[in-house]
Image 1 (cartoon, rainbow, N blue to C red):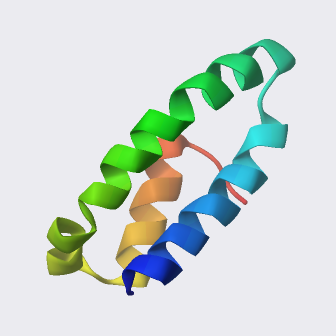
Image 2: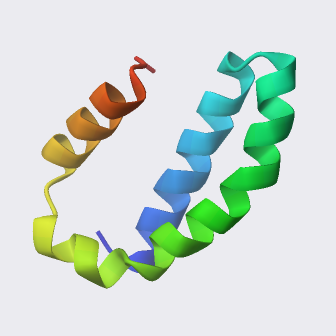
Length: 68
């Protein structure tokens, strides 16, 4: 997964996640998600060491406790 596809994935993930939050949580989430995404995107090189889409996606979904 290259930087652009990782960025695309995160953007799509956030777009699917946001409507599932309550209105009050959406405001807080939108305010705080940009710095978190910026940090995460800066770690792409580190994450490539553990690259395996199935494992990453499964772990991410379990960690967030959601099913999309």
